[in-house]
Length: 223
Image 1 (tube, rainbow, N blue to C red):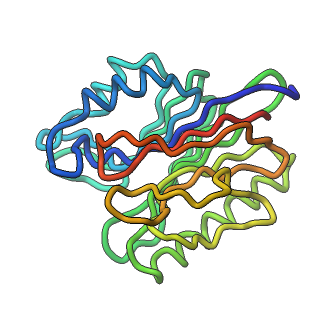
Image 2 (image 1 turned 90 degrees about the vertical axis):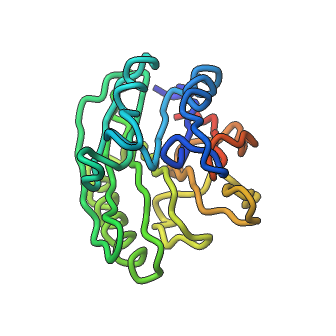
């Protein structure tokens, strides 16, 4: 299937609030509709009575297949990460990661394009170095195990909460070659779109919209 283009986005939506705590989920949804990514990884998304039934709203307003991973119970509902794709998700896995504070996790969503599986991993890592070391160790082992089977295309997306993530560089590389800042008000990059080495990157950008405390990242790739 050489030459298949995909538009890939990752976005920590800050529970549907901007940096000043104002409700912004409707703006986020309209923004996603405008960009129309083929693959979308969201972090800090809710399905509860206090912060809102955001998964339900997104399912209702966006014409995507959805994989929600609830990393923890919150306000009588769920809180976690979600991956959305324009193509059917043929396999879903939710991996709970070792956590010292807020419970973290990773979701693995598999889609099928033409003649092969595309493996999409979405995660939101912890705040401490010790947490992230353990979490990335598990992620690296998980991805390596799956890579040994058939060397499938891999996308690892999300908020890593660090400027120096210890991902497996023999399997993945960063689509951002300039280290552009991804969190509003700080000159640092903590969000990533990582891809297999046999995936070509046509374009990458950090989109400067202020609907969250993070900027969304967008990469156009060829598999």
